[in-house]
Length: 492
Image (cartoon, helix red, strand yellow):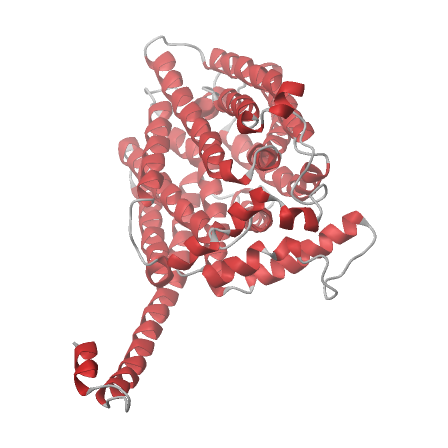
């Protein structure tokens, strides 16, 4: 540990490597693309009605219930214990998948998988507490990329084992159990952070004078080029104003943090630009999660796994890879997102709606696969743009808050959809009809943002027309102290 403390230049390498190894093995789960054939096959003998109406909704409900307390607990206990808890939840999930029988056992599986997804926030937040700000971007890209690589590799491996080796779905789950167990072991070797973003943050005076913070504070100059410098400057100073008389200072640490959260969120969502991008994020993520949760049931409905060869693993691999390529390409696209961003949201939401309608109306499993590829790639492209548009105006702390609230709102919307469309206490629609509903849902999102984008473009055009005559009037009359030809050259 002494060597770790005395080498600050390389102190970020060890936790990054361990966290990436944890992320890789926790996502290396080849059983997931073939979950529905496993549950409905001879291993579990569950009906589609039981899986769709009684088992899968438990994940949505447990995720919603667990998300907020886990979000608060994650920062309070300094991330590592929550990552370890996620590793334990992974192991329990796959042990029950292997050896549990009946609807109730699978409902418990969904509860623990809800715990897995709720604790995922710790994986992405941990790194900000153990590395300096100048390494944030690089380390974040490592952690996110390794999970995409692992998921793609697991899907390819699953397809090869099923199609070529004719391996039983049971053994795919055995491989997943071994992988998540290795991930749990790696989680034990993560160093315990000394500070966190909220409950164990540095005092504001220390933050003001720390050299690493100057890197973060220097970022508004870059943001100004993108047209968001004024918002960024207020956002990055949000957690530094505790010493000002106007900000409340409750004695209780937890109460003080909650008050600061409320003030930060109020200021963040007062920005219309951030509010509408967050609105799209929440609504689209709710629909995306709902589609991902039930798409395998649709595939099994179009082409039953007992009667035909299925290529779920290959489709998941191609979709993830295509989405990653699309997200990577965003960085090289030069667009005025302030003016045309919401038009892009509308157009790609139309594409998402069209792909879901295709999945509903087609009788071909290949057309259904193609619709899913288009849908997932479109979402991953747009969510990358949305994350950038939101994060570029915020400090790390405020981005974590906005991300948490957006995810919570998405879960509330998804829960409402699950209760109405899927649950046995609701309409309990057939799987094909569900995708008609989801397509209509994205069509409504597209309509809302199309109307708003037309309003934004029209308003910008009107402002430009108003400014043009005023500018020409100022240019037509020569300045009393300047020669005439100077004005003429300016106009040219």
